[in-house]
Image (cartoon, rainbow, N blue to C red; front, top):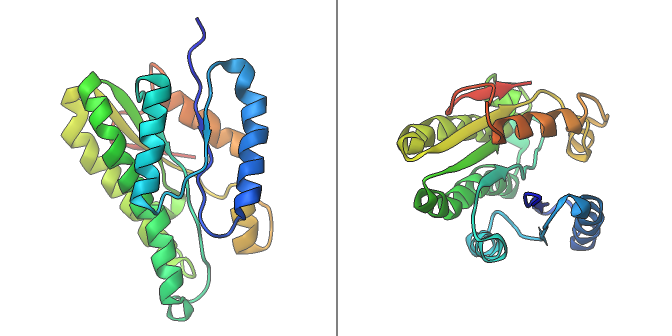
Length: 210
């Protein structure tokens, strides 16, 4: 019997709701032959949105086996020029989004005494960069959260990892730098899959650098 595959695209303000829904639909159609699938549109900066997302996933699949926290936004420029709204938005998505999803998915994993959580951080979560101050702060937070939570739940059979890629050729990268440069997103996806499966390349609590 094929194992269920999960897909979610969860983004914040810089994409229209119509485009998000279109992307979800296209991706769902591509992945449907792999097995049972549910595409859900949610805003990770809103606790109740994430709660509804997790509950719907559990109701559909009867378990929460793997959680990938991949939603993110970025802003570049001198920190003194960043608006309060911009700071709040970035922290809401990049930090609170991870905390909310983990907080709501973890009880299901603890109940089952198994599960894998993969938090997508960044090379900017390991090294600071001028012009990316708030973004770096948010990604450092993800690495620290990963290390700390792993210590709490390892004995319950739950593995927690971070993935720290360098530049990735995505819409977000292009919006920040004006160029679509870096590694292909597929490389990051393969790294995430390697952590979710048996025989992961690193120990729980660690960051896989790409």
